[in-house]
Length: 88
Image (tube, rainbow, N blue to C red):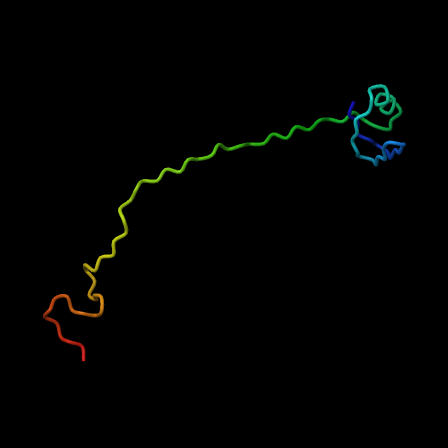
C-alpha cells in the first residue's frame, strides 16, 4: 500500500521525511496510518491534452518573376524606350 508520511521515519531499509511517499506491506501501512504517522497516498493522475499533428497544406504557387514593366530603370541604366537622352 502506498502511503504518505506525516512525520519523519527511519529504518534499516528506508529514511523518510514528512511528505515522502513509499510503498509498504498492507499490515505495516495500516499500522502507520492508525498510529497517525501516515495517510494513504492519493494517486494523482495528470491529464495531458495531446494535439494531433496538423498536416500543412500549401498550394503550389507561381514562381517569383522579377518584372521591369512599369519601372523606369533597367539593368545597367539603359533607356528601354530608345528615344531618351543619354546621361552625361
